[in-house]
Image (cartoon, rainbow, N blue to C red; front, side, top):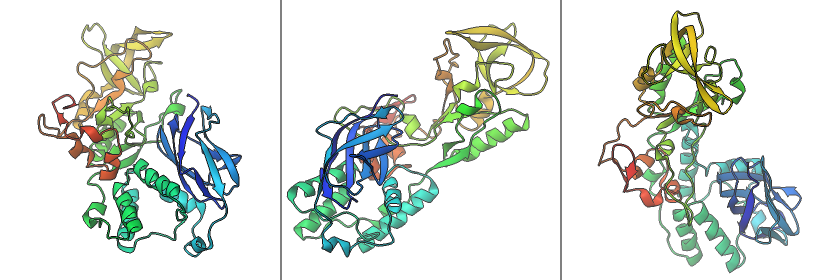
Length: 410
């Protein structure tokens, strides 16, 4: 994992008491453990993308270097990533603070900015947004009022970074003393679909430690996927997945391009665990094989952990190559028909791996309901994400792309 870098922060100043929302841009933020303001850890952080995160400044004094720590290391100190503590919190701000609010709660609210699509999170967001629209606040403000044009610009930049265009317009209207845009309450309702957590198959064996405890499945697909797993479990077999474990739209940037696999961000891709196959075909949970003596395509199977009487040719990794090895007296269940029943399909023909790093076989895609020449990418995104998240994403310029039967294209 590469060492993170911090290229800029906004705003660049805040009160000595801390509590300032600071947006950071850079690279390698995925998996960030903490953000540092000098030698003090930020009260909380929320990673928006690999190139953007938001942190709450801790109490401090003077000018300090801002750094980010990930499993790949700590970012280098650079002149463009510094934060200056100015004076103390004005007494007028103290009266607006809710004494019951702690840094942990503030951190939790910041985290909700992220694309968390579980039903509970979406419902909580709707409650908070409705309170904001009707009452003008959620809790007593932790953000100090700007004292000059530079700090005002910093807050506007933060709202732009977060894709909160409506809130930015409301803020400007408040500064000018005029009526701002009124959010439609219909826009505060949860999205039609969500990503739902599902317990993953984690059979005992060498691969178990690498398998996630759970994966997320789109709410309209999860019932069929669970029914498929029940059929597999009924014959004493398993289907371990590698992901997705969460979904977050990639952020828009000056050089951002359309992601290579939009279906993944639409909740239409499940990825099988590469470590669950090709190691020891006799005991691996998943097997890529064909009947012994056959010259047809290799196919995907689940290993039934009980004696069988059928012979196969299976693929197995040996160093830097994939070998064809005999697999005798076993019982396997073919997965393609079961996965198809849940709406998920591998590429056709099945992409049998030719090297240990070839994992195209793990991708299972669901294109049910996508109509060639009709279905728009923007309409599909709107099933899962709010308009502000979509507008701030790398998909913003491709919302009118249509499904052509294989991909979304202009």
